[in-house]
Amino acid sequence: MRLKKVTNILFILYFIFLGYLLFIRGINYQDTEFLTVNFIPLSTMKRYFGLLVIGQYRDFIINIIGNIVVFIPVGFFLISRMFKKRMVILIVMTLGIPIIIEMIQYLFSVGIMDIDDVILNVLGILIGYLVFYGVKHGK
Image 1 (tube, rainbow, N blue to C red):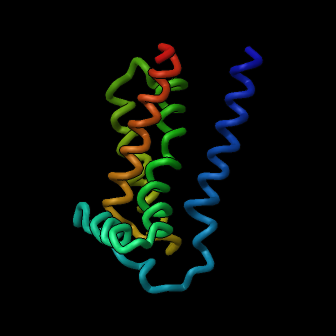
Image 2: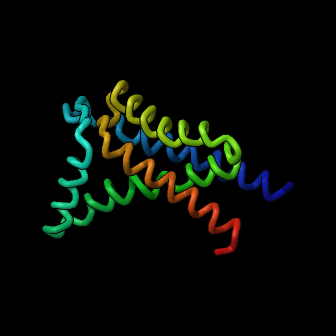
């Protein structure tokens, strides 16, 4: 029981951090780029992979790796806490959370609405599911 309480507190702290990272950190930006929408899959990723090739690792790590890694705990949380036995709800949440986040970022001008972010976030959530099963089954 005590372990469950500690993990719940850790997840709450994580979601506060995620909210800050996704919505508050970008508020000071007044760039018109934040008013754009990208519905072309892989176009943003292609740009960042191009930067990686020329040695600009920072932008690649922040945007590609960051969009994956920051959502791994979401997958772990979803599969471990709520929706293990309801696959339809799990699928809707896996796709819905990143889509809603992108829409909120666009509506409040704190980020770019980008399909590539959704793809990378979903990948992070799926990795979180794998981490959960790896930890649960000791592999």
